[in-house]
Image (cartoon, rainbow, N blue to C red; front, top):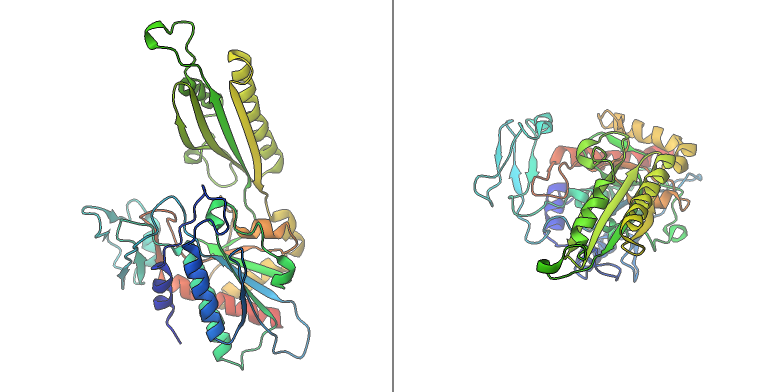
Length: 406
């Protein structure tokens, strides 16, 4: 049986960074490399598997029971975030971590420091996999991919292991919010599923943000600066003025837990015109709707001051809080808690300050909470994952399969 570490290192060596500017699916052709690899590996294990034109790997292992039990699915995404390079990743393997700083050798002077990331001290004595400081690692979500594949290999190689129908899904483009837009839930065949896409060991989540995007276009008017008095309308300054109409203490860097936010994620512009892109987040649906109204009202205020058409706001919902879809099936949360206990892990039920493919799937009839994959500091050069957390996650998958078989 291939070791989990080797499998994970093999997967992170494949560049699968998704591209939010692309209109194709998958958004980047390089995502096909890992998707095809996973299809081939599942086929080699004798598992029934397909890879469709949208980049969805779907596989199933038939039940070996003489009774009907729910079909359970496990899902992970192959793409890595656009926030940092996913090419030419050089992982560092730190065995028996001693609690000190870890030099990221690709960037002189850069280090993972417990003084900045105290959660590192939770993993003293364990094997940590880090970046070299030049790229992200890709544990989000190739740790989840490796954990699922590790469990699949165990099931296939141990025919005595009792299970109902097991459904496996690997998706592209989760990091750009398009992971399951064309995912065929009936074809997938699961009654309930779990995304293996959480963070630190023990995390279990069935609440996530309601999410929207807001794109604001500011139309200014450029005039030679020597003759601009009373004539120039600087689109950059007007955009800054609009941004100042939003509450400054409701940004990601000032919020936690269930607190929502407005997040300015990009800006580009000139005196003549400028574009501001935001994401809007809140766990509470009413507060979420109010935030969208606030954004629209800010644009209206700019237009009232500078004239119609100065600010154009396009606000689009992205996903909703899965709690309302999962909570009626709370036994799937209880099973996850029990599966973690069986693996010696204490479950930490908490809201996701983000979203997962499971949120959209839950609203399409497949209740799908999120389970830890083990990684920390996702989307950047400080990302790391303890090997022992990955091993626990893979064991939780097997425990869940056993519990659904009861």
